[in-house]
Length: 431
Image 1 (cartoon, helix red, strand yellow):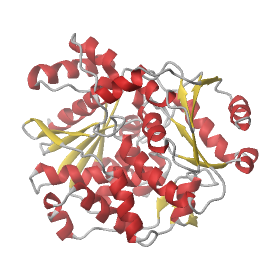
Image 2 (cartoon, one colour):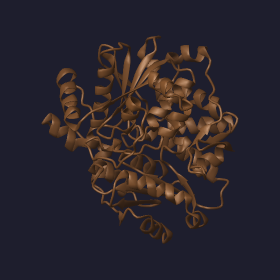
Image 3 (cartoon, one colour):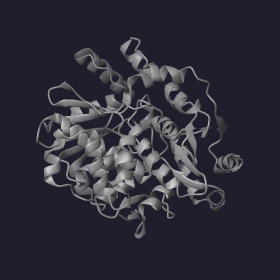
């Protein structure tokens, strides 16, 4: 499979180059040259297959020509060590729990897949691979834990100071070893900008073998498509379903679009955001107006210029009508998010995290006019946002033991400004 840049379809590279570069030299994102459609027999047999069998078939269809089958099996076995169970909350309203991995967030799937692929490619390298990752919360912890002590790799996590939850922060600032956390005085968008600038900087690319672990990396995106297939397999219906995706950088929704293009019967997508409503605004007005992000209680979605938006446009060949026929946008306030947490707990005894609450609101609003079986993604364990959830419910929630372990450890960070010169100086002096 070849991968092209969204800025130039004539710029094509192989899988290894796309994964290691992360970002194309022209600042575009890599996309597969063609998207295979899985046969109908596979779709109809989903309910009889294990999660690993599903992941293997999807990966083989996309990357089977690029990796030996034995390596594909190892990669999927490493990635899918935990399930993504579906829970029915109300009639035709399901939540897909994506928080059963080691860092209790959906990004464990993509991070482990990427770590496995880079570990495979690193065997061919005689230089250390430096992985840069900007995080608004869960990406940093998932990537840091996936790559911890992986030979031949070093991870640099950039995160906005004071804008991630304490639990999220502890999961990537306490590890040490080959993990370095940079606490940036700014927003997530500043962190993302610094990472992108690093890939275009000649000096840094001469000194380091750089790659990215954000959802700009195609190897983060592909495995996120697996759990859409897994969710459909558990619905026990053959009708097309609606997926509501709490959205920030829009990698998760883009992965769902990939699953649909591969043949999964999805009727519609709901792009559910907090106050950072750049994409819902575009879906209403056809005007894309990126702007500084606003801090909210669903902080992992605090993104004012979502990188994967260009992939969404690319999948629809910039056809606004086709895109809006499939995707509907909703935006919700912090107050509405808190009310949803309270309502779902009161009515169903189920505890949502703030991001899942935004997804629930998006789905239930959409289903008022278009009844379908609907699934919203519960992207992180509510205990990762205990301060918000406990304040909403006026109840203490139990921290899982693996999260308690992180909370007991000491935070270790390097504080930097949001200026590229400061960031460049800091990493240039790494030993």
